[in-house]
Length: 365
Image 1: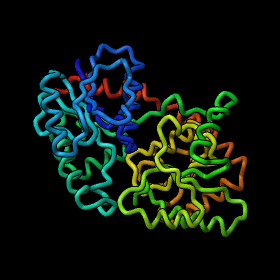
Image 2: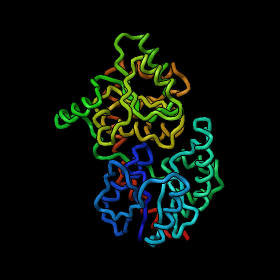
Image 3: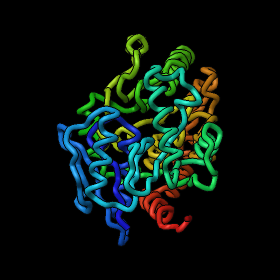
Image 4: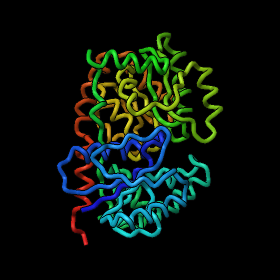
């Protein structure tokens, strides 16, 4: 089988889609598989790190839609692949079987979180891809239910293959101490701190997190600094001004290779997102032995199970209360640290890669 993968996001430094492709490739590289894999890549500055195990077809500079969809068609015709895997979108003319990975349906469930133009093209192009694809992959049972809710698809066509956690996400140890300190120094961070990760985006619920943090500081005199790491998106300037005024540290985008250090040195991760198709940061934090506070809605309880504290993301009191509980109770932090390690061990990118290949290898015709 010859599998082509849209790896154009590698090097874009924009978050979730890139993390998924990087993790999937890491998992595929660990397998002793006869599948031939070709990556469709783009030219970035600095260049993306591409695993040497895979053949590449570089299609040049990244082009925004719709042009890149036609780039894909031309490349696939030359490759003569059996399958093409891509996040969210497939080219209108697809010269092989297609599998689309739909991570979440936030643009359908909550269009108010996005600019109207983004909602429109996500809805239209994802809808086309879902109908066009031979297989639809998604990352949680929650997202599978959402796909069946918003699109007329055969449920048997939708396959759940959960995300994984990379081997770099591991607990702090004497072996990691010096490198962790060097990473934190580059970002101007000093432990202890409360960590929040994700683009500064409405669905990440950072406005309520800021209110919860202010309440916590009023209630207690020993609250560590709050670190928000992520890129500003879609008119977040006012929120960022308020955050700085409250003492929040804003290091911006964190390189993937630096994330484990920032997790490991955090007192806790707080991830109160309003809508997630999976929610990789809580799982990564748990793999680092860091206790987690996250939302009690959408896919997040499915991912963390009983290894994290969950709170109603619409309630600033609930978010603040869960944070206060962890700050006050060292034994609870230790319990969640151990429970999180055990839970995260169930999710590896090798298992994700195995699930993807098994799905494509099944004869469903």
